[in-house]
Image (cartoon, rainbow, N blue to C red; front, top):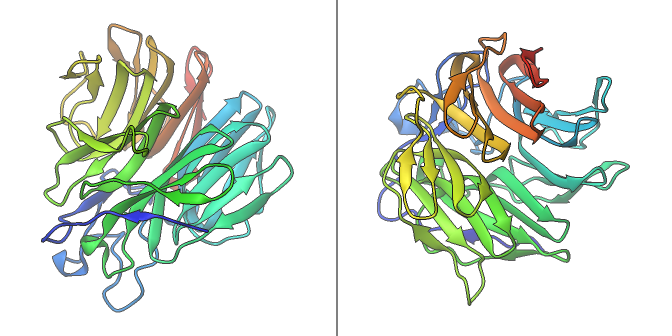
Length: 342
């Protein structure tokens, strides 16, 4: 069973979903309704089934996750799945040609990947298999807290164009994918959880404003919109419930201290950051356009050269001296505690 909750998009169409341009460009690409103009490389064509909301060109990598320095997964366009075993990157058969945009897991024998057409793939330690699919859905991100607690979020555009889509969330409880109650009209682009009872999902509404939805999807702790005023959101990661970072599509990173959101100190405004992740309060990374990578040491954000100008769409770290970032043109860079290298 693949149960999802489609979130109402309200009276108006979606104004514009910003997604990374992983075609080697230096600007974010706008996913908009087909009648909004010809400049949207990720548009769903008006004369065809809009079945590639996260459309990425060949070799574009969209997400990375690792459980250790010898267990790293990267996913991207046309069913691409790559694995690093500590010595080299090896392609794995995914069994799908859908664009893959999210990856998460709990260990070497349990990883999850999401993508276009509601694709959910599972790694059991020996191979990848298709767990679920849902035409007309783009699952943009996934977060696994345990093997029986997995959240996937994205955009449901089955009713028409991307511009008229609505966000949705689905949850794996170890037996089936189940619907959760979310009453906010949003498109969801990222998910993070501090535990089973504290799940955060971020994205935007149909006014191009950032939206945060938080809860557990249970009667005792339903999902509710959290207080936030700012631009569209693309990524979220936290070291704890009172130490959470947000990455907007355009603008400065935001930090939650348990009481309020504040702009990130010493970080340039107007940047385009697509991903934020870390290992602790004093070890946080943000990456984005132009190969930019910034590191937070607990007090100051500082720029760290990556050796590439390709857009970096995703970053992940499993230890302070071991982080990975992937993006346009299949670029992969690694932080070894001293420098980023290809």
